[in-house]
Length: 252
Image (cartoon, rainbow, N blue to C red; front, side, top):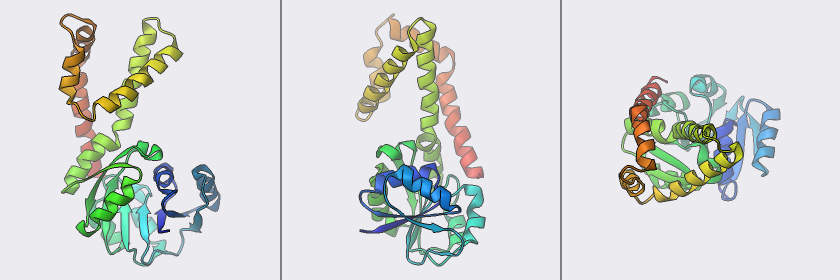
């Protein structure tokens, strides 16, 4: 069984490892043995554990999961030349990764929170010779899309990477709206969850505008609610959210 080495043991590393644990041998590198043991416990599978200082990455397949601000510092604590580095660091360029880590190849990956349930939307870009491997590896945690440039990946980071946070805001607000009108909190949450579950399937094959038109009757309840969303500039706020998140990704 092929070994995948995680450098970093945070939430994203754990989410990806949950998707890979049945198909790959997992090795995890971190700063603290206590945190590595916690990672293993939460993963629910036996992993190889190693402390970061002087860890050798020669010819390893690495998934790099540290904080973007720590790239240079982590690079001084490991040695060797990795076969390939799959980086999940938002806004950290291929050039910076290659300069600091000196691997044979780099692929930038942007999974999202749904990796832990193998439903991530993961965008990829980098060294083309590893495209097929990247799509297979990250395909174990959901859907993948190879993009032609880092600019597109940074935009995708704003959309799919940060998107779960935007949807939680909408989900909570819709449930709050139902409670405000008199629905019990538990019932509002159950209804909202059912809405998201079914809609997630429909949106795979039908354009959003067509779904909207299918549910909006002239002068009906949906038209009234939809008008309120337009009055509140929800559309413009969503577009602006992508712009702000993209710009932030280019600044990291």
